[in-house]
Each structure stands twice: as C-alpha cells, then as structure tokens.
Length: 408
Image (tube, rainbow, N blue to C red):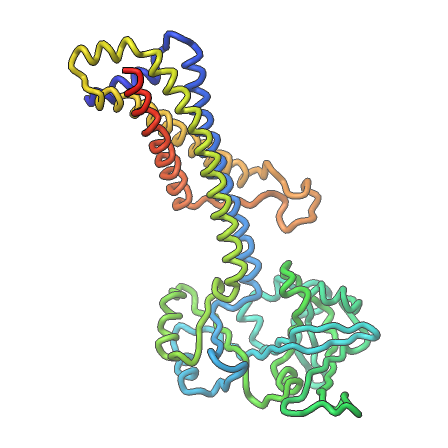
C-alpha cells in the first residue's frame, strides 16, 4: 500500500490529540460538500428552466426554418428549394410571410408583426396547445380573413378574445412614395376578424407583437405575389435534425440558411448559457473559500503531528514523503466532500422533481410551473465533481509544502 496514502487515511479517521482538529476537519469536509451540493442543484435548476423554455418555443417555432441570407423575401419556386422539398425526411412544408404593420382597433393602435401561414401550420407546430378561447385555429373562410393575436397584444388594443369590430391593418405600399397631401394613399389597408381565440406563448416577443393570419392575406397586405420570407419544416419522426440540416445546407448553398430551434432563439439560449456560466463561476469562488477551512485543518494537523513527522524523518522519510502525507490528507477531505456533496445534490434534485419542495411565487399559480424545474445532466455532475477535486487539490498544494518546510 502507498505509505503516504495509508498514513493520511489513518489521520483522517483517527482521533487526534486535540478534539478541535477533528471538529475542524469535519467542518472542512462539510463546507466542501455544501458548496458541491449547491453547484449540482443550481446547474440542474438552470437546466430545468432551459428545458421549460424549449417546450414553450417548440409549440410555436418550427423544427427547421429556411431563410434567405440576402434580402427580405425569396421565391419558393427556386430549384434548390424544390429539391429540399422532395427530400424523404420532410413531413410538413409550410411557406410563411411576416413583416411589420400597424394595427388599429377603434381608437387604439400599435405596431405588430403580421405572420401569414398556410393552412397546414397546425401540422407544423403545436399551436392548438397555445390557444385560449372558444374558437379554433381558423385563418380564413370564403368571405373574411381571421387574425389570431397574442394575449398581450389583445390587452394593449383592448379587443377582447372575441372582438366584434374588424381589426384594421395598415402596411406601406411597395415602391410608392408618400404623398403629403394624401398620405393614406401610400398604405394598404386590410381587415382581420376574430376567430374567437388568442395564443399565449408566455414570451413577450410573441404574445405582445404577433398576429397569425393566412398567407394570402399577408401577401395582399404587403404587396407580394408569390414571395415568402421563410419556409418552415417539420421532419419525420426519428430523423436526425442535425444531419438533415447539413444535407439541406449542402443543397441550398450560400444563398440560404437553415436554422434549428436553438438558432432561431439564439439570443434567449445565449443569455441562459451566460447566466448558467456566471453562476458556475460564483459557486466555484465560494468553493475556493470553503477550501480555506481545509487549509486550516491541515495546518493544525501538521502542528499536532510534529512528533510523528520527526519519527518518520529519523526512519529515513524525506521531505517529499512528509509533504505527500498531508497533501493526500487534504485531497481525501476534498474527495470526501465532493462525493457527499454530489450525492446530496442528486438527492435534493430528485426530491424537488418528485415533490416540488421549493415552489415559485408561494405556489399561488402565478407562474407556468408551481415549483422550480430541475433537470440533472450527467455532464454537469461530472463538471462539478472535476471542479471540486481540482480546486481542492490545488488549494492545499502550496500551503502544505510551505508549512512542512517551516516546521521541520
């Protein structure tokens, strides 16, 4: 057996001359364990929130989205696009056109994004799960066009879910200069009626700005014949999204870009990743502070074992062997704290998942979920374990070598 490890293990569990050393060693291990537990729980909560946001976007955003690298619109009849359309992995192909417009209801008006979609938009996304009201997802009938708006936009305009008067929509005519004497002539004006439903994504980006309507209405409003601003796709079940995207990119070339859900919401995911990384850094700093307790307990242990170290030197042990004993002691404390902390963190995450121990907003139903969402990722657990071991090992290296030289 390795001599430094054998002696360090005996020192870790054996009773010392001074009981305070045992207490400080236990406190050191507890400090490392608590910091480790906090890291596991915090990163898991960030994972839970990210997965919750992903579910919200999944119901509104397409699996893949094709847009032009240059220009606002493009023709869906492009040969490369038709080649993509013919791929066997494509289940739903939907042409969309969206742009800014001014909407007015009675004496209230605001800017909104009009998104024109095809009738198969329900097959593309889970939009039905976002609808509230007595109506259905209806875009048009033989007489009128319908507009399904976000709940915050509905509140701003004061329309109510089922509005009686039509919603007026204004968009500037293409390639037409505004006549100061008659500025209204430079705008297209169309009317949208209520299908008796609104959507709630619980994201202000959508709820406060978007109105979903038919593709033909959007083309007539913005003055386009057959152009689209994007093509949204749903792949067949079991298809590898990354591989399908790469295949489409190779077909489309540099004129188009293909985005998955993460890339469509790049800003949101980037912010969440930055927040998670900053939390990780702060908790690592707290862990480093907790390791100072390990240094204190090792200092007292070195003083307590001066007679033992003198005996070892007389038996032929060199300074390196003496230092390795106490270095191993500090590393064992860090390892013990890491194991206990990871186990405790996983246990807390399991209890939170099963019983929702910590609620959001006092559990009064004001949030999307009643309790903090938790999702444990093996990569995060491994990162925490490696971080604790690394910080623990590095924190004791110099102090132990310095004290062993000073007290010999």
